[in-house]
Length: 460
Image (cartoon, rainbow, N blue to C red):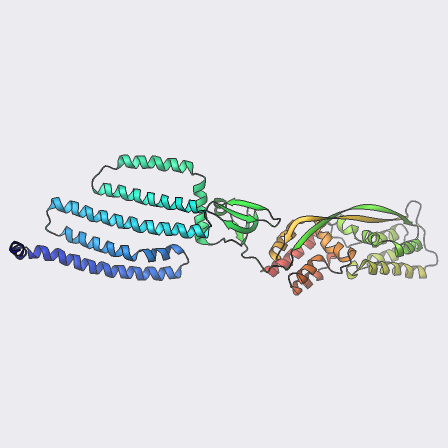
């Protein structure tokens, strides 16, 4: 004990200076640790990325250990310890430093994998695999660094590691880009399950699942599409956001086809035409007043009807022909009302004409009717967004059916779209706007565009 006391008296300066360096370095690093954690906490509060929160929670303990190790190393550097001891002691301190970093990195990486794995519904075996890969990579790099600190040759190990990485890269060359893209999508949160997206390559639908490799979307015709995550990252994606108000019952689009059938009835003059019009089925009236709209839907001419054309051309009764052509078909809620107006116009004209004309041989009016078959279209709309996307895709025949046939031939007095908007979506204002569109002043494609504009304006 006396020898130790005597040695301290003789070497007090050599002991006090390293101790002072250790204490002051530790105090300074502790202050720096506190300020760093303070700014990191403020930064994490401003961002929505979860990694910064995990970083703030993980770093306090390791940063204290790092401060102690660095303070000890600084005191060792200026100490009077013999060089043959100082080198191994310094290497031991740096080895502890590397080990503490390894533990911290593994903790952060495994937490990140767990977080994003749960967010993307990653299978549990895949999460375990990724955590093990992260541990192996971090420990391998740390092991090489420690070997280099102690002067052990690492070139053979690095070469072996490079060959292993190359083999793994070849084995997972397709999976790695998708996984990285999935990580980007999850971190940015620009696309979430439930969003309606549309890719520039044409795919569109509701996102129903996002895994670490693929994103699964459901189209409006109930088909499922698997899109690689790398495809989503590399192409432009329009995200329309969350679904809109759901309809009480979905709108199911239909189409129809029809065959033209001769009734066996024909008229040679206006009197015969008026008499036959009074008793023919409403499908006959409908056919002769609406076939122009569908057969010539690409034209923008004013609507006409077969009765007006025959009266003007075959009978030469141009005044009556113009009156019949001027009848606003859209203003009649039922085919019965339209029939009454046609007959009354003809009979009124006959009451003023003493000698109505006869049609020339072979130019009599043949009454026809359409036999329709209703077919379901592959589109169903649960909200306005699905509705407008379906409107872009339905055939002209489907549009014609829901606007013209349902309103007059089926006696509803209103088109199917307005009825659905009012009764199922509860949007009376939108239903009225659609009902106000006069379909007889549009081509079918023009009517489709007008409907799409109205709905899109409502969505925005």
